[in-house]
Length: 290
Image 1 (cartoon, helix red, strand yellow):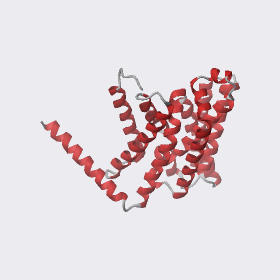
Image 2 (cartoon, one colour):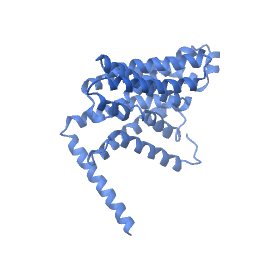
Image 3 (spheres, rainbow, N blue to C red):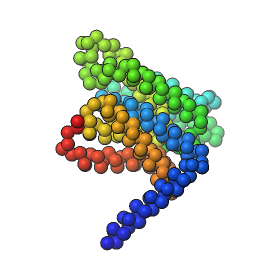
Image 4 (cartoon, rainbow, N blue to C red):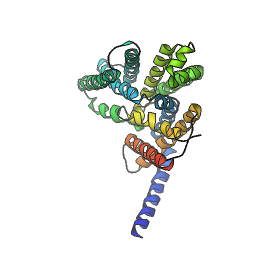
């Protein structure tokens, strides 16, 4: 009985916190911008996540994500836009990894591990040489959606537009490469170009997530909602829709639940996403997706 009462108190308290958040949402612009940032990031993740999950290249996405810190550190050191540095570093890392996989003789996982470590080390070293920017290191690693500036929202919107345009034009071809590269090559498709294009699109998505959950936890939002969707449907297009909606719901819920207790929203969003994946996995055991 005591446990039941405690459970109901938790539910009521959570509902009160949510009410306070949505009331504050009507009055504070920084919350409105945070919600918009969550929407923009959800679109990119929802579209690209299923490719990553189906192609099983989460480790590559992780390597790209962690190498981005090097670009951010160099950009801050040079006094330029850190997101521009992040974008450049992400694209370079994606092309390097793709090039080694397609043409190189080195082990792909070794290169990814090297880029992962080098990117983080370079970023931390350069940021440490910039006075007053040490606090930003935490925000880049773990995200700070509550401090996203308006100019970054424009960049996020532009990246979303590029992702949607490219996927709209090349979806069938990329899909063929994702499922069977050899068959796609036999059909005369430019497999090398499409594979590198896919990695570059993943790099753009990683940059989208910097403000939301930071570089450390990018993989959670990029892969888990898509994996949940894959437990219910086989169609990649349906997976994209479900993953987008899940990302939006979980990012909004995480932001709302972290508001009143003054918790970091990035880890809260990732924790909710992880719990949703575990719950969905338990509920769908033995069930075949449609």
